[in-house]
Length: 174
Image (cartoon, rainbow, N blue to C red):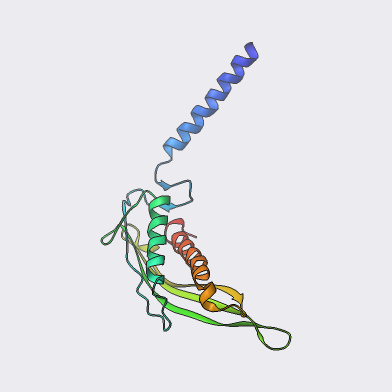
């Protein structure tokens, strides 16, 4: 009986210390890995205009919606259209599909869809964190498939990766 009380007391002490440590850790950390300045309350997000030579008419909206959703669900920031403490904007600069591999008899075996965007990040609370950078992602698909039959799926996968890249670069500091 005495041993059981000692174990319960030790367990309670460990829980108390863990709670005190977690409660004392204020400042922009979250369980998602985001590192946000504690005084940052808002993030302004703008549509990414599409300046690519070949245009997917849904791409700009897809990027915007996925980014907005990620910032809203994984940070305490309020997403606004302008004047945020943190500001994300950009543009779509390339949307291309091209042969990426040949088969043994020199026929095209796979094609590659590549999407490139230029991202601008402004941190009004820490200007040293500002950046402007191009990000590019691609997916390959079997050349025997019609592009229009795989385009939607490929774009969704690429947008997901680009949004992860933007999120990580802006608030996870990788």
